[in-house]
Length: 125
Image (cartoon, rainbow, N blue to C red):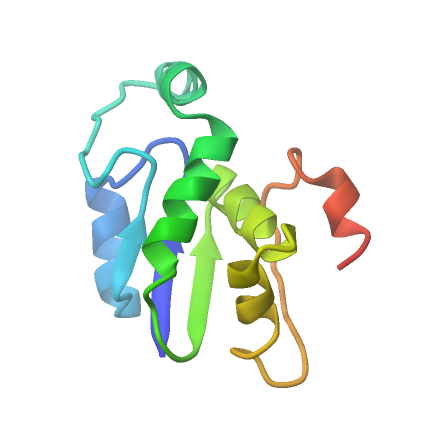
């Protein structure tokens, strides 16, 4: 089984790395390619994410990161990471259908922490 953490706008921080180790996660997906951006505050992180990445690009980063994974996969997303997961799962793309179909048995359990980018999607889940 693959356990993948999908970060928030702060990216791959030292705290997230410690958390991933405690959970025995196989990988962390973040918007900045694994670089700790060392943002000083949420405003700075949000501004950089909005200007240089955005949700659509983060979804593409997530898709690329999880595409090669084999077997059961658990995705745990934080804030915009959760939004990216929802976009992948509900996009109708083959990868989303694979994660919703073949890699789970009879049900899909989602814990949603940030749905402000996906209000219309939540109702169909």
